[in-house]
Length: 299
Image (cartoon, rainbow, N blue to C red; front, side):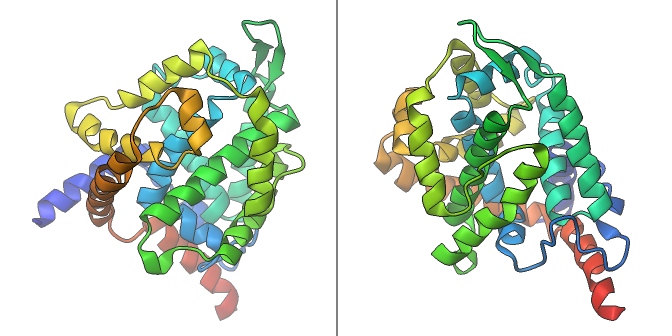
């Protein structure tokens, strides 16, 4: 493919995913800073959160799974500006994940403190009269667990086979991401694949599709400001359906046959994802983080 096309893809993706400015200073210094959670190149978290296709498909799956919690969905419906500014909402989420994964200690604390502050302002009452607040520890655990379970599922489906995690590394991934959730105020955060599945099983009786969740799902399926964006998002969104647990697809009313998911959605999303990854090229964020971490060895 021509170099000009690669440049255009990179510019468009950087604008949509990161808001245009990567803010590399969050990742590049100070030299030797290990980051708030001590995550390093080669760690499961670094590998999962650094794989674009898995994160994009996993991100869509996370939003669908999270929407099944009536209290979580009420908070999003009442307070989020995702309908008016979906790209801005995406930028904020990506900024939090990349900074807590690859950023310096100070940068990670800054984004965590900001999210904690925002959470104090998000509270209200569901249509059936139940109070909710975004800083509720149990609600934070739900949002975190649904998110990281989806990210890992995306990685295991769309990363090159040689880069996928072993069962032991999957457990290590959950252990490494748990402190991020706890820093936000979550409690009793699952720390292994078995604990995650047991947690989801315990949560299932309280999960259901609300009108707000149905509306959000419809919005996601139409995500994209332009025809070009929608052409890219649609196969990734379709593929994300395959990352959901069977019971979640059924609860959401998504009827997409297994043959379609495996024989069409998976290869098409893989091709789209590889093209996007080619356009992005080597991650400048990860390169900056590696340079910062290398300062410790040089010192």
